[in-house]
Length: 209
Image 1 (cartoon, rainbow, N blue to C red):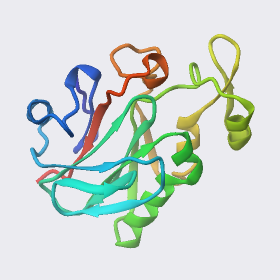
Image 2 (cartoon, one colour):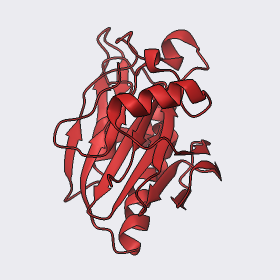
Image 3 (cartoon, rainbow, N blue to C red):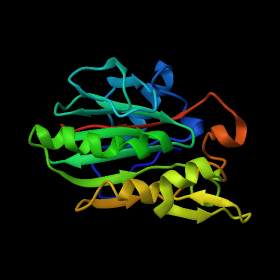
Image 4 (cartoon, rainbow, N blue to C red):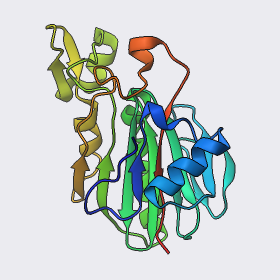
């Protein structure tokens, strides 16, 4: 069942059972009602990049991996199945990023923060949602060398990378909350690496009225 982090007003992280409200209107309505979110959703066609779009209305916002809005009444959504949903809060804006290892390495969370602060919305809090943990994110040397300062070890003893730690490094000076759920070993969540599934759970962020 979807959850809202404590102390956070406009954010919710879905589970596999909640469906994908970006493409399923019934799931969207159910999810929105459960967490008290707007019924109008905005989404992007995720490409593992760093493009950021500012959103005023719901619907398809094109190819990008991060969104933000300064307008109440629209929920920003991303879909993930091992990548991390990262929500950024400012007093008058909210943003959300789809952060896989490629996007994290390229700085997608830092780009989102920069775009929000460029319009006067200073980011004060970040929430890192469910994603694959270092316990399960086995990597080869070509990925490990890109995150040389975030090397860890899986529970079965092979090299891994702490992607959530790499996200925190892009959020210096910001309060960071982490739901600390690993999508790979927690079967409440879709995991592409575990099941090769095309399905995604959704995370949403919005400005309360």
